[in-house]
Image 1: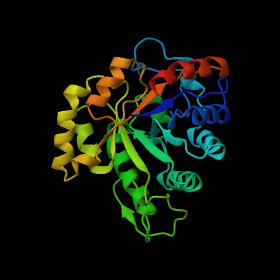
Image 2 (image 1 turned 90 degrees about the vertical axis):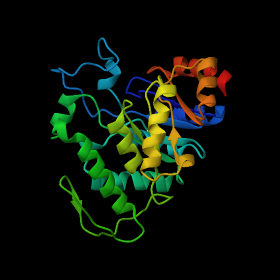
Image 3 (image 1 turned 60 degrees about the vertical axis):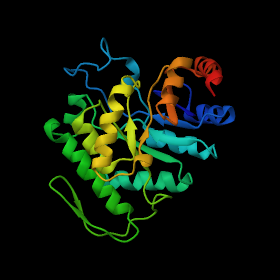
Image 4 (image 1 turned 90 degrees about the horizontal axis):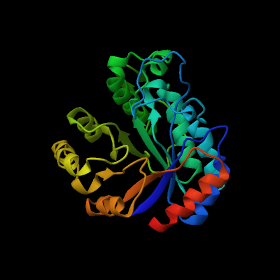
Amino acid sequence: MRIATTIFLTDETITPVQLARELEQRGFTGLYLPEHTHIPVERTSPYPAGGELPPEYGRTLDPFVALAQAAAVTERLGLGTGITLLAQHDPIALAKQIATLDHLSGGRFTLGLGYGWNKEEAADHGVAWSTRRDVVRDRMALMLALWAAEPTGYQSEHCSVRPSYAHPKPAGGAPRTLLGGAAGPRLFASLAQFADGWLPIGGRGLTESLPALRAAWESAGRKPEDLEVVPYAVLPSPGKLAHYADLGVTEVVLQLPPAGEREVLRTLDDYARYM
């Protein structure tokens, strides 16, 4: 099983360059970074994990800039987002960012994307909350059009682009795409439509969820062997990782603390027993 990591990198934590070098030297396979452009002070959206929102949410580095730094000092480390809030982006500009990062890193980028939970943050980006799922679907389709080998246009209710010259292309035609979100028919239908797999936070309840996901996947005409399930932001234990392996999981993303170099490296030393 591949062992990757995620962390809220901020202006107060270990740097992307330090962390990326340590991860590659220690044999970890990937670094995934979350995204929040800002956290409005006046907020009614509850923190999904309960309680007060941790301060690192309002201090996150831009994931694409940080991953570009990580790419520049590594050769093998996978680079990913967990998650890109696609409804909050101009998809034409984002397609260029993603294609450039994937091209320059030699095809190491994974696009983890999702719908978000903070209504106030999304509203400041002009997102109508009730339409965000449709917006994400359409913007993903537009990016795929720009990544196509030949100039390809896309027109929908929420976005459009003319057939265009758009280079560089991602190294493999389109990066691996994993959709985050809570288990359910709507998420699984979307996942089967435009993603390569699922990025479930914490990885709880997979035994119950996977049959429904596989059924939706195959109903959409997708090959069973192509489905990827990547438990995300996991606090590991030997039993938990063994359970994932029994379910056919081939990659897991472990949560690192949003801390300075000493604490993060101490956690990596602890996680080394799972490698």
